[in-house]
Length: 310
Image (cartoon, rainbow, N blue to C red; front, side, top):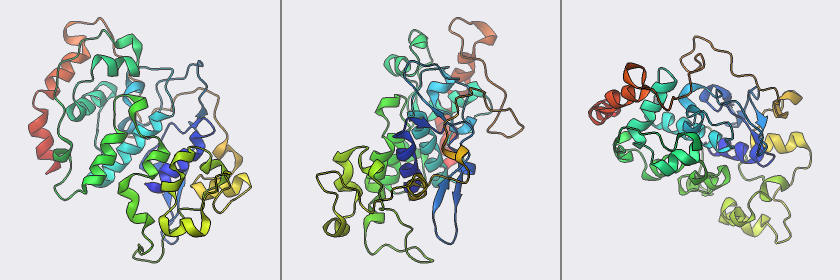
């Protein structure tokens, strides 16, 4: 996960959003333990003021603002998807296994509760007057197994936030206490040493200089301290070297070229890729109102969730 966040911090610093973060797009070399982020077919450089398609990203990992039909979203949709991946690693199954676009929102509300009016406004201003059934949030410690590390749960809840701007940035996720063990000089993998995690490029250390002292382990700061002048630790100068250091797949130039052709994901039979759901209506009543589905399915969410996670 650390390598994923580092890769996201790198591409986000160029304004490029991956828009399809999921386990299938994370390639891990079993020998070197190096992770590569692949499949940039849905990636796009997001420019403020320019609309984007909302039907993007595989369903289980789709951020709520996309479900609400937002077209002015940010790179924080990748952060939500990464939170879903981390939660899946901890649970052994997807945390939000929705069977449709609306059902995906149902699964999210079961855990996070009903979003407030302000949270809805932050996701999509067009829905701020919509009335949702009031569902209480499920306690995070009950979502995961009893032996789940508290810091892992804390990281998940900071990634899976309704309000996009409240979510951690990828670089903030890298310095989270959950990853402190990686900064311990005595940490080893069962098959050998850790992969290179701290060979930061100039681009990386310029993202948020205030975090640099926390990014670099204390035992390395005396040897390779980031200077006040902004010199990089273990500088790499070429685009390929930078991408390799941050876990971006550069097997072909298209891997890091933003996609400006706004075509939605082609629907398949895969459970995480379904035909485009309709944008949630604001004035539908009766049997066709998806909010009735949400209310019915979340009525007993607490008991079913406890049973599923036990």
